Amino acid sequence: MHHRNRPIRTAALALSTAALGIGVLAAPPASADPSPALRAAQAAASTDSTPSTIAAEWIAGELSNGLITTLQGPDFGLTIDTGLALATVASQGGTVTAINNSLEPRIGEYVGDGTKESYAGALGKAATFARTAKKNPTSYGGVNLIARLEERTANVPADPAAEPQAAAFAGRIFDKSEFGNFANVVGQSYAVRALTLAGSAEAGAARDFLLKQQCASGYFRLDFAKADVPNQSCTEGAAGSEADPDATALAVINLVESGDRSAAVQGALAKAGTWLAGRQRGSGAIRSAGAGASINTNSTAVGGYALGLLKNRDAALKAALWIRKNQPVDKYKCRTALTRDTGAVAYRRDRVTAATTTGIPADARGEWRRATAQAILGLQFAPASKDKLRIVSVRREARAGDNVQFQVYGLAPSESACMQVKGDFLRVKGKKSGAKIVRKLQLPTGNQRRVALVKTSDDEARTSLRVRN
Image (cartoon, rainbow, N blue to C red):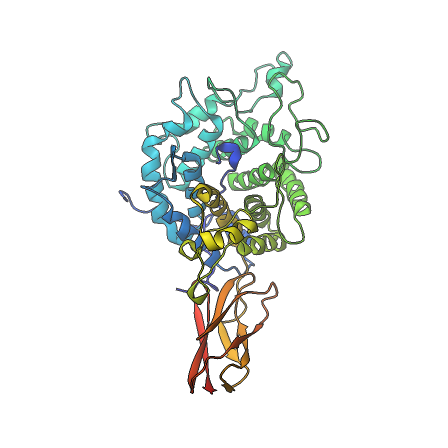
């Protein structure tokens, strides 16, 4: 079934980054209705659902009994990321339900037992997924995720003047754990979203503390200040207040999806959107921050999706085009070792090159899963083709061995395809402009009519011409 001109019917739901641990149906499937934010963002856009659909199909196939697993056991954080991503793809409601059915009975393994161990960021993210799966976050696997999250959210003191330090970190989330406190800005953004949608009395303070983590330039930092530091706000130029594009993008996504329309939030979103757009390169890619910073799919996907929700469609489109280039579709005569993993998205382009002959290495599969889960969001803004897929020969007749010119129309920008005739083939990608692609194929021997084809991941077109020896 061809998706290229079908509007995407999805739900805009964020997924987290490495900062939160990345990283049989028994109930009716969860729906995948688009959120109001995504509906509004895509209202004037012509998008191609093919890349997000095939990415979703691939990662759904990576689940084992509803969970993403590693040699060490289930990766609950990445499983939730996968579920949140799949919830944005109309055909994957059943898979979201399967994930929920496996996750809900084991949610304590992810969020802690609630006594000795209770992880604030995980609680916020789990509550977000519960709501996405049409479940009640106040009674999820026997756990009241909202009440637990409120316990991990610092209260506003009765007399702020008498308790200035408590007032400074009011609304901040804290882990309770013998292993330490690893709560950060990404977790705070999920907490704000979960508490706001639950109508919690602590939502306002959590939101205000999140907004303190935005620096003057518009970006959000990743880590909080130490709890005993009087200044709990982001301070541009100071150690610990470095820009983090992933934290910024996820703060935007979660604030948008929280539905908070306050002036403070709208102002913060506008500043963050301007900063993210300025961070984007001409290619559409976004570079990560911190040690080992690189241009990569994860940062580009969440950044592009955030920009799309803010209705900066040009920036979102550019990001989607760059991501789609990292989604190899080598099928038919263009087959490679990656063909069996069609739909998967690479973290960086060099991973595609390396895996073309060997396939995805076992020890790299986790990276491809993480990249693909987040890529699904960025690919929601991939532009559609402007024409029906077709291939045209410039000649009606030719001699065997001739290099004959063919014109291909209807490839979406950055879409991969295989042009082929018996004995010859070429890999091609759609132009950013959506214009026709002109390539030559060598004709085989034999006095007969030959068929030339162009094939994408989900469509094909053909033409024919007479060949004479």
